[in-house]
Length: 126
Image: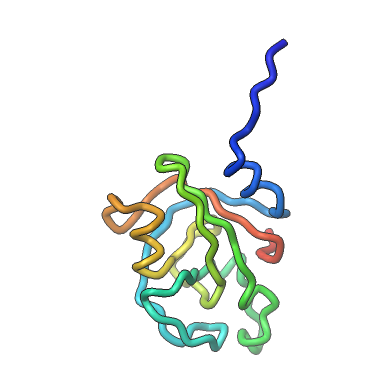
């Protein structure tokens, strides 16, 4: 029986995750998002779908705000971390919307929407 080892990057990504998703990645121009955190286009920030954010009466108090997620592009083998700062109202449950700079890092040849992006984190719910 042959045992195949996982790459260190895959292990690093999978170890801290309690929830993992796959979906499309798009980009947007961040500002002051639903978390009340001011962010710019060169920061590594992300907006999650309204189904995952589940904002209450005061979205600034959302425990997902300020948490970090790992994002993995299986095609390029690139992994990055991003801070949750906003809600993506047009995203499906597994989709994410990231800053333009982070999009270019993860998918340098992407045309604005990249399918099959894996991501997750301990505080993103499910």
